[in-house]
Image (cartoon, rainbow, N blue to C red):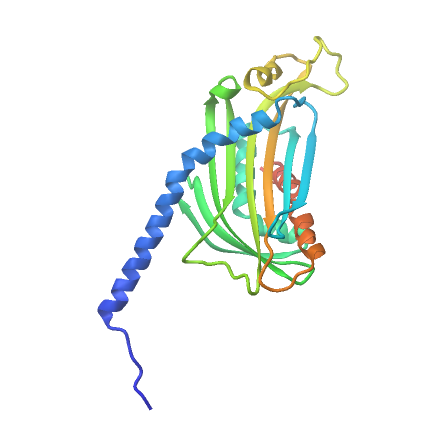
Length: 283
């Protein structure tokens, strides 16, 4: 019986050192991308909503199959939260949801989801990377590899110098440490931008002291909603833009099954808003 070949201690240490260097390079890449990701978020949602009245809710969706047979879904939403104490409170709740998304999706969407290898960078933990593995009701298993960026701006020039919170999540295309497994899993890519700020609106049922004008989606026009009046109330305005792609794996999956993955994943904004409300009410 041939003797087993064992690696020398030096070889093991060299491999460990190279793995550590690779991890450091990957983390540095995430840091280098942060500013670009965050700086493009607010201009994008303002451009998408420039012809909308932001004092009313909005939702639009576009679904299609691409040339590779992947199911794709683009969504854009404008939502409101009323009765909360502050924008910072909602930002903290949204961050709680995104860093514990596997708990909420398991409970609300009926799919068992586990999170693997959650890492954060910086004292404020404003950069995070993690993988999600989900067992779907249809019997397939999906996998996602994500990076999360977030920042709270005390003042932002694009919306009249007012505070806003920006959160961006994107998919990792390639990961040498954690490669995708298309032989047994369906790859789910989700890129999303979440922007929150505080505006004012007339209280329902109150006699209006001035005519409330539609607030359209640009910095100067959004600022109209900050008029102070005793018959007005504070409201958190939430923009959410997302793009989802369910990629075809190397095993046979019916098209309707891929579409069903999209149906379930598209509900995450609704789950997020409900989680934020529950988080805020518990404070």
